[in-house]
Image 1: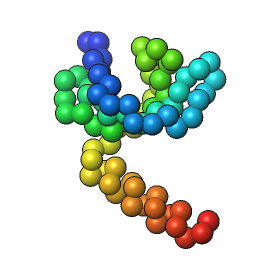
Image 2 (image 1 turned 90 degrees about the horizontal axis):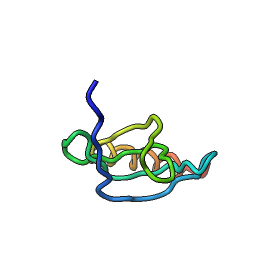
Image 3 (image 1 turned 90 degrees about the vertical axis):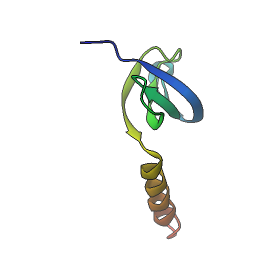
Length: 76
């Protein structure tokens, strides 16, 4: 199996810190030379290891943002 290639193009935000110093982040990442996408996952402190995550296109992030705004604007 070939090595997974990635490059963090832009660090957007730290969402939380987990055990052992791992940090859950949202970043703009290119995977295997493809177009950069928004990525939410836990990373080791030196960003050489990663946990499972989710990668979203710009349209998916826009939809998610709208859903979250609606969800949290109802007072709950």
